[in-house]
Each structure stands twice: as C-alpha cells, then as structure tokens.
Length: 530
Image (tube, rainbow, N blue to C red; front, side):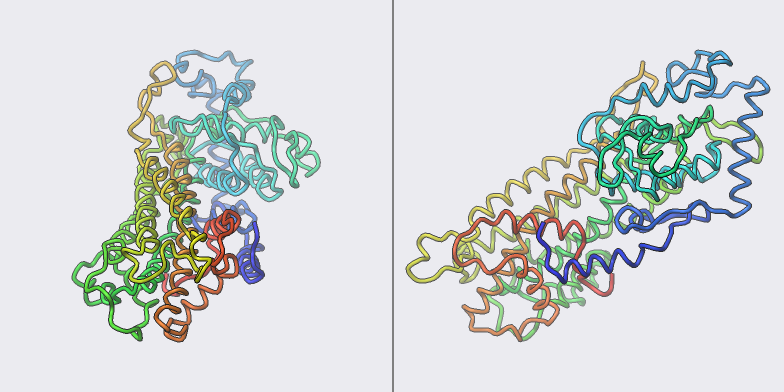
C-alpha cells in the first residue's frame, strides 16, 4: 500500500501511545481497547503478580491435582471428551490425554488468521483462563504471555469451529505451539514452533491433565475477531457521517436535515450523534438549497448510521462480558473445591452480536452505494457532470469518470448484503449428537469481518467520489473553499494526497486499495467528541 507521510506519522503516533504500556492480566476486567492495544499497537502483556491472584490460580491447579490423586473423576482429565465422556482413562494414560486432544483437533482449514487476529486470540484466551476457574497453572499463563511478547504466533486456520464446545479446532493450534508442535510465524518467517521457542529461549510446556482442554474449550477466537470487528465498525460509523456531509455539499443538500432541534424529537443517542457530526461539517454560508427535502440516502443517513452506533453500545457490553468470562468446562469453585459442569463454551452472545453487526454494517454499505448512485447520475446530482468526470471540452466525450467505480461499488455492496444471513441459525448437530446445538459464533465473526472489508471498499470509492464532487461543485457554482469548514478542507486534502482529481481516465485500483487499507486502520481522526 502507498501511504502519505502525514498518515504514516499519525499511525506511528497512535502505536507509540501503547508500545511500552503493558496490559496487565489478572488485576481486573479488560476492555476491547486493551485487546486492541496488544493486537494493533505492539503493547506487551504481563501476568499479575498480586498475591491474591497468584494464590487463586495455584489453588485451582492444586485442587485438581489432589482430586486426581484421590481417585476423583474429572471430565476431560481422566475421561474421554464429548460423547466419549463415559470412557474412563487408565491412570497411566492420563498424562498423555491433553496431547491427544490437541493433535486430533489439528484439522483446521482455510486462510490463516493474520497477526493482529492471532494476538487478539492469545490475549482473550489468557484473560479467560486468568479468571481462576479453569484449574491451570500460573506457568501456563506465563508461557502464553511469552508467546505474545516474543510474537511467536501460532498459525491458526480460520475454518473448522462451530462455536461450541468453543473454538476447539483453531485453539488447538495455540495449545500445539505451547508444546512445540506445528508451525508459527516468528520474526517475519514461518517456522516450526519448536525452532521458534528455542530461538526465543523458551522451553516447551508439558501440559497438565486439564490444560489442553482449558486452552481449547473456549470462545477466544470468536471473541478476538469480535473485538477487531467492533473497532472497525465504530470507525466506519464516524467515516460514514463525514462522507455524508461531503455528499450533501456536493449535491447542494439541505443542512437543516441534521439540525439538533429536529433530532431532539427522536432521542436515539447514536442517531443524534451522527446528525450532530454531519451538521458540524456543513457550512451555512452556501446559497439557497436546491431541494426542500433531500433524498433518503442523504436525509435519513443519521437514522441508518445511528442504528449501528446504538447497537455498538450493547455489543461492547456483550463482547467485554465474554472477554472477561471463564468459558471452558468444567469450571472449579476454588473456594468450595467443587467441580461445576456446564456449557460456558457456547458462544451465543458473540454469535448474535456479530450477526447483528454485519447487518448494521451492510446497511452502511447500502447507504453509501445509494449516495454514490446520486452523485454520478446527472438526472439527480443537480448540475454535476455525468459520472463526476472532470474532463472538459473536446476530451469529455472519451472520459468516463467514476462510471466503473460505481459498478464495482454496487458489486461490493451486493456481496455485503448477501452475507447478512445470520450464521447463528445454522446450528448443526455434530460429535455423535453431543454437540447438538452450537453457536456458529466464529463463522458469524468471520462473516462480519468480510462485510466490514467490503463496506470499507465502498467507503473508499465514495470518499474519492465525494471529494471529486465537492471540487466540481466549487467550480460549477463559482464557490471558493473558504465556504467549506476548515476540518472538511483538511480532510479533503488528506484524501487527495492518495487520489488526485480525476480529469483523464486512469486505473483507480491502487488508489482504492490504499484508501481501503487506511480506513481499516482508522487512520484519520474524524471527530473530537467520540
């Protein structure tokens, strides 16, 4: 990708804020931002050294050890897994069982999770195990933290989880790395886990009897992807508000559609926030508007954007509750020394949040697709050139402006809309009907990330088109940039640094890809009151 100097400096500044601030696990609740500071901003993690925390972890591991020594029966420790829970494991084979669990789940396929997603997965899994209900040793938590801090990242296939019993197959690749098996990425290279551990000075773990199950039997993958999706969706709602303001300027829209007095009558917080953002970007210095009421994709933009913004509030609640939960099975009440068998590995809350979020985000794509359709059509754009072509005089006949970009945008939008079918309703009975109702949370999260990617592509296209439209409007209306808010002028300059005014036709794929990646990174600070 090609980045302007100012964009690179901004991203570096955002990263440097967190680079040396470790995320402490075990001292309290983590937030989405804590996960992202590790995944996106190079922050390390540290396991709490508080006595109460260490004592709780050690007590759980010791209880399991004593229970086994006394001949107790513990699911997944001296019994088989899932439908095989009635199978007793002979004492001399108990120590081998965790390794078999990790190995037979090594059947994931599909694209590998990228570095950011893998880091987020590790943070989510450490934090869940650190709740003190899983019976793992402090050594295990420290070794997982070492993987994060050394950036020894398991190569985790994205496909193969039904979201209950949690993310078994993808998380088996985390467990395998700890024992020195399978492949990782380390120092920019793919290599065997054992080689990476040796280079980093780490000793492979021998998993204690429940530790394989504790690592794998949880919702860390879907939760990690949800954290990444939440942040990108939050940024898109802000960007869509800015883009709507640019589209309104280009179309000579009515600023009154976003008046705070109007929105006071319908007090959805997210909707009011979006309207306030758009209103703040629009100047009252323009001449009389062309239409009393703009078309819905302009006039109702806050109502579309606001749904996503309001949904993000409860989604944060559910994502962070999952992040800070113990979600393997069985759990241990360390104080009462009781085993609790249940189904906290079921990722229903994440599944529902991601199914809802992908619908809200796809609506943003649809909104922006409709705005672009208005801008490029001379029947509706109030005097702008057809397809926003900047070519004039004799050469206008052979130049086509944003004609093909609008076609591409329609394709990306259609694909995003197609993916809004909820994954959670496609539960499949599996594993001899033991796992007969499953969440599909990881599939929902993966779908959501794809919808976000497509919507970011739509946003990139509309960014280019709206900046082009505003510049053309300034020319055709004999206006000057001084009639634009300074923040709008500054933002247009940032976009123009990556995509210049389109007068003669040229390939736009590199520019679109660059802007799409900048959007994904949340590069530009848009509004002060977020």
